[in-house]
Image (cartoon, rainbow, N blue to C red; front, side, top):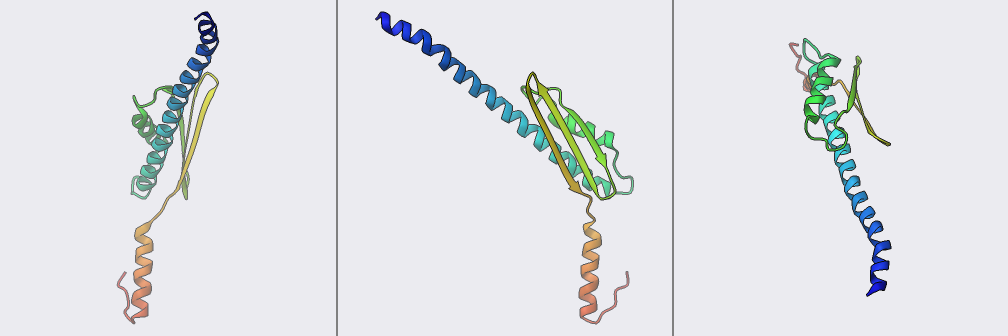
Length: 135
């Protein structure tokens, strides 16, 4: 009986360390996925808004990102975000840290104009069939 107690006194801290490490790892990957998906959604939204007449501002994208991660992260509650809007591309970079753990995510999306591409295809088809476009 006494031998089991001594063995368990060495074994239990190792088992508890493994259990707590796996829980911490699950929280880490949960928050990493939340931050990455929020950054992706933000960059897609920014790409869509950049085509509009008013365009989009970096502050607006940063606020949108913060809204998306609000109350969803377990470990990394204070994520820092920066957005840059260029002529051809929108970039959202998010960084969060807790003690020695750091998560950095960068998502990029080109600013597309699908209506323009569709018009070009339609013009090409019209020219193939001998019709002239009124556009």
